[in-house]
Length: 360
Image 1: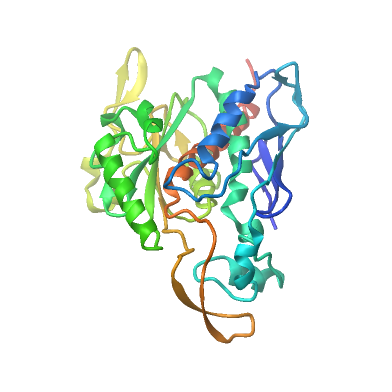
Image 2 (image 1 turned 90 degrees about the vertical axis):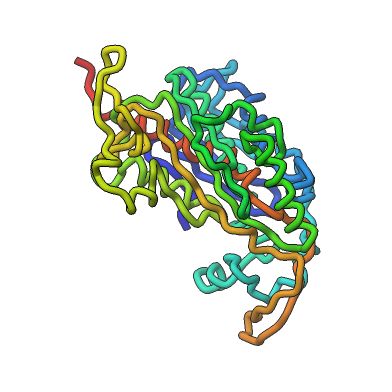
């Protein structure tokens, strides 16, 4: 089982949904970075359960404890160990699922791979483990801040309710002003209604998270197997419930002509730029200095509070109804996770790029 992410800046995670804690070790953090613990905690607060009526009712403060690698408020260059204690597990809610395979969960595949599974909330396959990614991403954001690289994600779609414009048409600084994390208040209200409708019916709904990276210099990424967009896709598709990834104009480009999609180069303020950005800031697997933007599609949560048919570990047909506290839609809480994964990819790529150049 691979539990580490990254090349130079790496995150190794541990823990299960209903275990004692979730935690990890960040290695490769540049020395001398100011470690703002309040900023790190704020990223966890954006992801934590129980933050609004749109999320699971599980109440976790998700307070992070940094165990190493920080001295007098700055990173030392040593590994940064951290832990977040679990406090509000209701493991008994999963007793009726001990011997069955929940539809569209990792129960069956995990059992076939390892021969056993932790039925309490999905164990290691639970989305609760993403809080470790939020800590790693928060640290990466702190290191990227002096470089002028910014990362902002937002909800662009919930069910059949979607924004019609691109990110340049909205004030992304306003996404924390509503529970859905959508930059358009009217659309956010309609999205919230869709989520609450699904919740009332014991059902769930999917959605899309968009992300924009600004200030990224040209030259990050590799032309072969570590293309920058491939690394971003790998990171995003590793998030629980993620089902699709596209960057730039993505699938829409398949129905166009090259004359409609090429990004012509030009000079702006004495620097090379492009007149358009259909490529999404990446060409040949390498950043070109323009905004990087991409979309991540998330499926509806697989846990439904209604009867479902399945089979048990003996292969016998059975029916069950899930109990407990679950998200009717993951996308509002996925926003900080998308940002975190993008931040780790960008910092790791920046460090790799720096390692490939010798000062002259």
